[in-house]
Image (cartoon, rainbow, N blue to C red):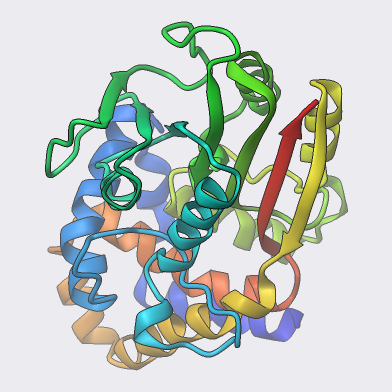
Length: 301
């Protein structure tokens, strides 16, 4: 597997000057800019996501099909959880531009949804949706024990204080309420990585504007420390691999034309280039178990 990572690194170095990845301050406004630019350029053109949702493609059969891509799996799972457990009040942490809220609130009109983000927005206003401007490490606008279900899709990776998030979520959830997470993590502890793995990890983190990938099993400690049971902990590798391979294959075809890439990349925003790099590394990063993508379901005791 190391040979695959080394080859990926050499391919990218042939078309990239990685120094731009370290020009970011990782300020929240830069992260918002990253998502906006990738929504319109990367996801709607390359991924062909009409809704603009920006989540990993997952499928139960492990095949990469159009109707299983772009976050359908994650939103459908949460929709089923809301219905099966008769949840009425739901919070999305890191709601971003509101695509998940819009989909779920439209399907569950009898429920009320909150979305919290530093810069929240939504394409269409719905009566059963309220947007909160703020940091999900501080949920003080929400009263104790008032929420049935909290969910986050690929947002907790941006937190460097995940234990604080668990503490706040525990406070606002009703007894037996649920905390559902889909997210990416490191599958190995940092101090066990070799030089190649460290380099690939660093470039992948910076391309996605992450401070660092958290070791996945740290979440068990955070959950148990704040009175949560772990109902489900699933490595989604088999559901994800075909999708990230598909993205890498498309990029491989582009990267074959080095001079064209260098010219074209001189005009593209750095946010797009960073995403290209991270997506490219992800395929063999997942395959080699350097990175992982998990579904967690926690329940407040």
